[in-house]
Length: 174
Image (cartoon, rainbow, N blue to C red):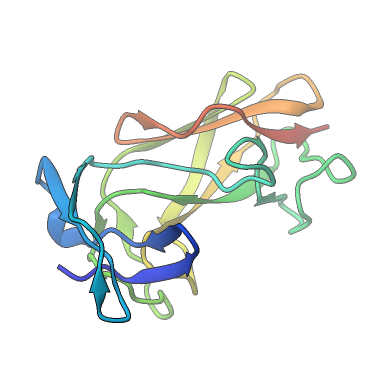
């Protein structure tokens, strides 16, 4: 099954995992470029692998927006009880499943339960769907910031289908 490619650079390829592999334990991956093919490698298939984009290499400040659409940062922290918006990759199956398409008119629903924690406290998931105007495979999630101590090292974690996003992601709260 061909996978929609998002980007490539020396030694790295980003692609959207096709929904057709759902339910398998593993799948084979092979990259072809310029008429040459890589070795085939077997990779495990999981129901979700949520990841939050950050300003670091997968850790540190989350790439996210506050309720007033300002970028969440030390100069613009989120208020308690406000809504923050984040993008998450690896959300698993959606309804309908739309491999590699840009979501313009409809935004497919996530099929697995989504929960979140901010500063170790449960955060209400206010909204969840595929992200508008991005490739299928990126979710848009809005959370209500619970009452947590202020700071810019406030832990942020999203769980989809019982699988946690990567550790070490933070946000700023005032």
